[in-house]
Structures are given as C-alpha cells and as structure tokens.
Length: 247
Picture: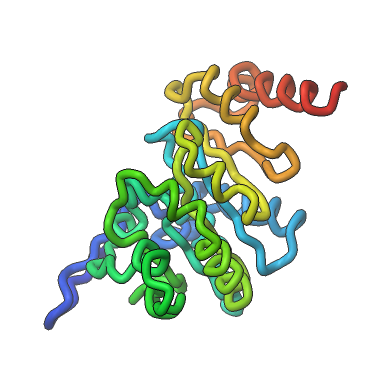
C-alpha cells in the first residue's frame, strides 16, 4: 500500500500517519472492511453517544492501531462526530500514530488543571474527519489521575458533544484500565496472533465485566480466521462465559 505523506509548509512540520491506519488511508481495502464489520457490531448493540474502550491483555497487541481504525470506520459517516482519547497515560502513542506535531495540552493537562475545558485539548486532524485528545506528557504512575472524578466529568462532557468516543486504554496487565471501566459503555479486546499468551487472555477476561465486553479482535493473523481462532482463543472466551453464567 502506497501512502502519500504531504509536507506542510510554514511553521508546521511534516505529518506522517502510521501506514497501518487503513480505515483512514485506504478505506477501500479488505482490511478496512474488517473494521467496518466491527463498527456494524457495535452500532447494532449500542446507541450513539457511546464511550468505546479498546484494550488488550498486554502491550504490543495492536490496540492503538485498532482504536484508530475503528474511529476511522465511524468517521466514514459524514454526519458522525468522532473523538479519540488517549487514556494510555504511561506510554501514550495516539498522537504519534496520527502524525500530530502538537501533543499538549492533552488529557494530563485537563486532569491537572480544573480551569481547562475539554475544547482546550481537542485537536481536529488536518486531513481526517477525526477529533483527538492526545495524552500530553507521559505519567509514570497515573493511578490517581485515572481514579479522579475529573476524568469522569471530562468523558461525560465528550459524550454530550460527540456521537462516538473511542478510548485507547492501557493493557489489562496494569490496573489503569480497571479504574476507568465503570465510565465506559463497551470494551473491545485486541489479541495478537501467535503472540498474546493464552493465560494472559484468560486473566484479562476474568477482570472484565462480561456485560461490557462486546468482542475480541484477533489481530495480525496470516491464516483463515476459522479454526485457529476457535482452537486458541475461542475456547478461552467460551470457558470464561460458562464460568460467569454458570452454564
């Protein structure tokens, strides 16, 4: 896939979005169609004004790429207002994936400064129909910020002004995602083929509210989805559901 990377003259530096953002860069591709399928599933179960969290059992599973591609699938509808929020405050990467040169003020600034409004940190991408709240500066221990009522206020404000709010949350091996779980509507979990340990997937499923888990995205698989998914991950999901429901 060839990605055109325009250079912006003047004071703005060149922006270089991640070429894996197929929903935004190559919407006619087969890969982009898979994200439209995910969009269809979410739209079938949730009304607009939803807070949609994307997470993974561990780091490196592709959750940020999935979050941005899902947001791009929502943004394909001209009337939809879509916001992406980087909640991975330890290792933020939304801004880098989108090629944004301005990373501050971000979510961290909003959480620390009560006088800042959500609009102060929202950036509208120069090419894509997306609004973004980058994390801002990394925070090595974000526990108190993610636990604060201020975060819930900001997310509720976002819900009022956007049709879909996609949250790139930390991996579930950290306590961070569990802190914000109560103020999200649904979770999408991303697992990487041949990489995500099955035991970590099981642990991630055990700490999640099963009523909010809308599905598992099987990422980076070079084989047909049927068979391998059922053997490796489908069995874990079914066992988890049986334990939760007693059936």
